[in-house]
Image 1: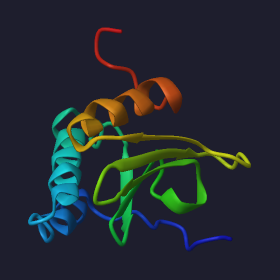
Image 2 (image 1 turned 135 degrees about the horizontal axis):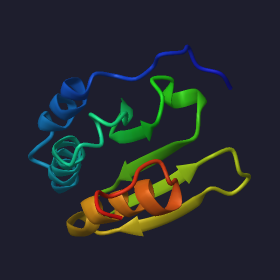
Image 3 (image 1 turned 90 degrees about the horizontal axis):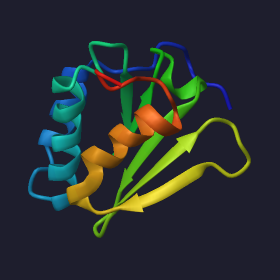
Image 4 (image 1 turned 180 degrees about the horizontal axis):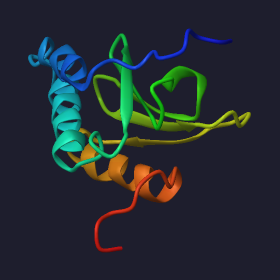
Amino acid sequence: MSFPPDNARSWSQIVAHYEGFLDQPWAVAMHRLTTFLDTRGYVEAGLHGTTSMADLLLGRASDVLNNPRIRIQPTAANIRIAYEDGSPEPWAIEVGFDELCDRVERVLVKRARWFKIAGT
């Protein structure tokens, strides 16, 4: 399936999307994540994103949906992080709300290898 190109949303739209659900624990975690990614410099360094319902999709290009991406899917109990690179079975892990920021950063740096942490 192919999507229209340049399907990324502005980062402020993504943050605002999760602000609309802050009465839900998963949305608090997602809002914390989107703020974290911005303040840690990932957005400035070229991280793009879009949303699909509650999911957050991250990529290295403004064409997030047609390229390798990280899908973050919240549920009432936890959050699933999947690296979708076209493999028949994408790598995935489920994490608690409190560990979301650290785990996504680890995926960005070690699994996808899209970024380096300063000083490494």
